[in-house]
Length: 249
Image 1: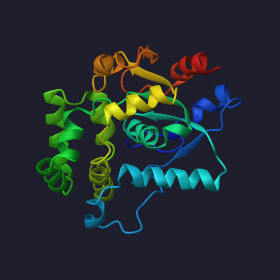
Image 2: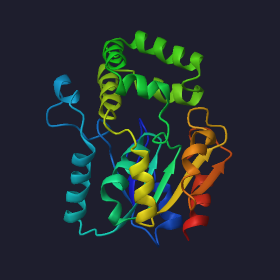
Image 3: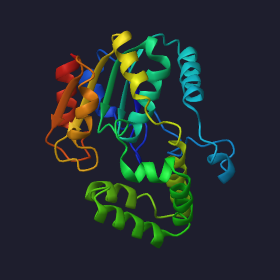
Image 4: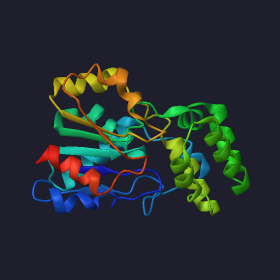
């Protein structure tokens, strides 16, 4: 099981799954770009503005799997990590057994991520904002006022802007998602054609990525399994583990 964590987290986010599911899966958690020890060889602003392509990321995963002698695998992604898990399915679907996404921003990333990653003006503004802690706090508060993020999302991001390095990492993380927008038709076609089991997990109280964002998308996947937990955005806990174990064992 290849694991892709949420923003501000790290590769051990899904470690809690091991006691319940370790007899069936070997969990491999990656520290995603600009998190923990995963850095570019050249972390200049110019390089960060050249985001990785889906194909290039899939090639990295393929190289890793070849090194570890991994043929087939499942993927799980939470929030930001759902974009990375989705790219793996889109590009390497013939090797994937299960596709599991929680708080799946890959379905609908919302205005904040779209504005700051996809659109040039928004990305340029984010670059300016990340040069000042006070400016970024104001952006977070304004985004919360507009309903683009909730208290939980604001607090997650707020903890990641204490230093200039953390603010740079925030900018870089948003920018690197620029080319990771889900190709909905390709994803659905791959899930169906490759007979990949798909599980979507939502928090009933998650204001950022509530269950309703999947309504239209999930209608196109007859076999998709949907789990709605009585949680907000922060949902990776014992209840999450119990729900997933009940499905996978």
